[in-house]
Amino acid sequence: MGCGMTQSGGYLDGIAPDGLMGLGPGKISVPSFLAKAGFIQDSFSLCFDEEDSGKIYFGDQGPHAQQSTPFLTSNGNYTTYIVGVDGCCIGGSCLKQTRFKALIDSGTSFTFLPEDVYEKTANEFHRQVNSTISTFEGYPWKYCYKSSSQDSPKIPSMKLLFAMNNSFMIHNPVFMVYGIQGLTGFCLAVQPADGDIGIIGLNFMTGYRMVFDRENLNLGWSRSKCEDEIIWAPGNPSGSANPLPTNQEQRIPGQHAVSPAVAGRAPLRPSAAPPSTRRASHLMQWLLPLLVLFVSPTL
Figure 1 (cartoon, rainbow, N blue to C red):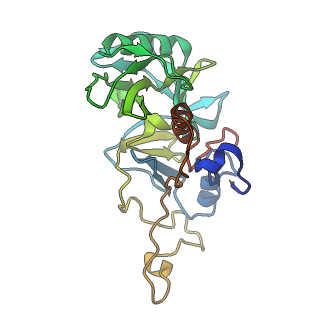
Figure 2 (tube, rainbow, N blue to C red):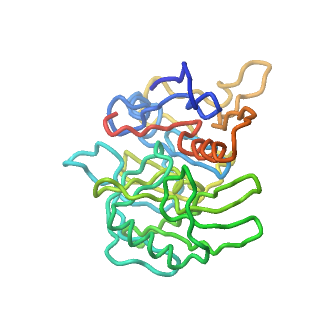
């Protein structure tokens, strides 16, 4: 765990991460320390809203109605957060032979699929979309399309299938491209992975409360707008002599209780850069979110 201190280059435009936090299954990660001390259940959740903000709740095991799927081992050990995806659906078409394993990584801004799964998924998306294919300089995606603020492009839905009839609907699989005149197009924000394990990144998690239940070795998810709500009441699961303070104990005498910290986007400085540079800067705001939650495979 560390804090950002000296920032330079593109970070000066307001996209610098505040720091890195180890959230992996390893013994030295933040959740592991808290659970071992008896402060929380061995679980935590993340949620991300449409405004590029989010929250983290340590000890949260999610609502009873959430969907879930088990974590898978890597070389016989639970060293990172890997799940098995049974298939992909685009619109009403569920594609054959699209089963794969995926790393759940909030530190990766966008999603990567194994190359064979990517080709089938992207081709079906392209077949169903009703816009003209295009390219946008500085953007890494292959399947991009022209659009405008006056158009209503038909963007097909995307869904991942899991065991026990669980499914994960992607709220927004595309990245909108803006220019001087407003919306100019959009891209399918998915790329091919280098190996046979995909990465479910931050863009697919938006709109969900993602629960990393390390105690029961499950990944859970449910719809969430990341609004202020009591998701988990601090307890003392192991009978530790150091329970978390109650709400009353957290109050400062004579003042109001402090509400949870919420990640936000740093204000952007005015820029006189040309449109192409501003588009690249807008993309970088996604590629390097203000709050980087790094899920380390070794921590």
